[in-house]
Length: 242
Length: 369
Image (cartoon, rainbow over all chains, first blue to last red; front, side):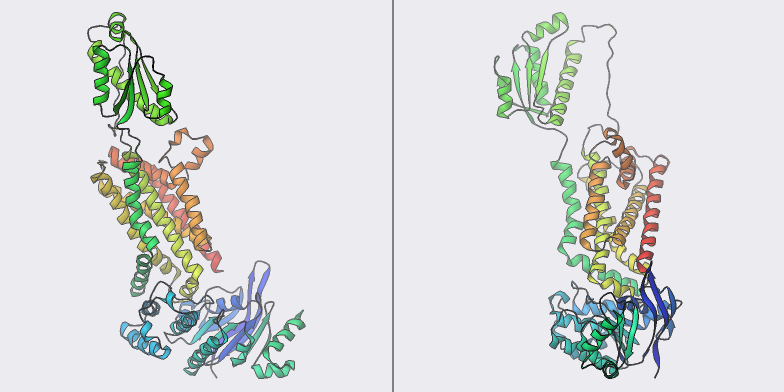
């Protein structure tokens, strides 16, 4: 399978504090890659580096076939990003948000209209096309934010704790969208706190104190740590390290 | 370029959809100007006075007529000799009492000297000073012209005063440049800093930075609408000042516009700098008000003369951009001077702009690392 992200010996330091300590991993095309870790484990830092929001202290990073140091702009053209504060403009309508973000990625108006229709139909939001984002329920906002993040058909989409603050049913529906995107061949790189969500991923990496402590499929991890579920795996890793 | 226009479109939607922003941008300048120009007026008109004429002769009557026909004073009551003057003030109806001594005319003609007492209510010191100045000016003028012509006093020096550049001593001449500085600071610096820090607060800034947009495009996209709106505001204020309040523009309009543009650029770069420091909208607003608005009003020489400030504040006022802008504007509008006379102030503004941009870039890089 084709590798879309390769990371070798990635180090990120803030002064004396080492946020990412020699990270090594690959992400393959079309997989859902779960990036787990406690708060402050360094997962957001690593993710920001992969998105070109922050530059590494040392190490090799290749995203979507482009070098993060020298081809940052090409990297950015080929990724989508959704931050944990779901990221659409509340004072713009659904259509205006789509128009703005597709404009940034250079999508032509005719292509936009076509895709927008399909998107709103798939989400069942046709009647809300001209509603302000601020007036929509949180679950809808998050679905829409995700759809907008992959509107330009990126190779990889980065989701930074996308389901914070919503109920389990809405979360499950959100994950249906993620599966659909993965079926279309979009690689999904997702950070999360929720261990039940880790089960949904193809492969999972678990970070602790700046290091990757485990990386495998959820099944293998459970076997390896003799655990019933991912929650136990996570706790065992955290205890081992301490 | 298409990306950029899309960005501007989005920014204008933000501005036009937010009533608070709209009020600050379009309502505030006009309200401020009208307030300062009309209501908060240092020029006195129709102040109520009382006259205690113990002489009742031709001269005192003529002086009274002169005073009342000047437009500054209205006669509220005539006091009888022996009235308790303090009681009149306590009732609060009059601001000043004019007390002519007995045999005023006789004394003036015989001895060339007569006494009139001006009693003013100095619980409002400014008004009291202005009232007594006006009254003594009118009285002296009358006595010099009408009475002393026949008497030739030896070696008398007559001072003749002319108030150049503002003959009528109209306070609106001072307010227009001051308000312009204040409004442009407010809109350019405060609104940009708030609008950029809002993107940070909402998390949309990260999405923008993770997009193919370059940081410089993002900053320009955020700043350009405010540049346009501030510029429209500057022109509105100049226009209102000229048409409604009769403030002259003696110098070149092109030059005036160019200097306003420079000041707006300075304020915008200050706004960007604030937004690189402030983590959210509240802090941005707080910093803007505390660090920009208050000093603009208090330390720029707009309200209080810089010469009268204690030395530390005088030194501090040097780093207040509006101070230099107000000097430039006054020079161009009231004196009609060109770049030759304000190049130093212009240079100060250019330097400030460059320093703010430099610091912003530095801060921005630190944040990205």
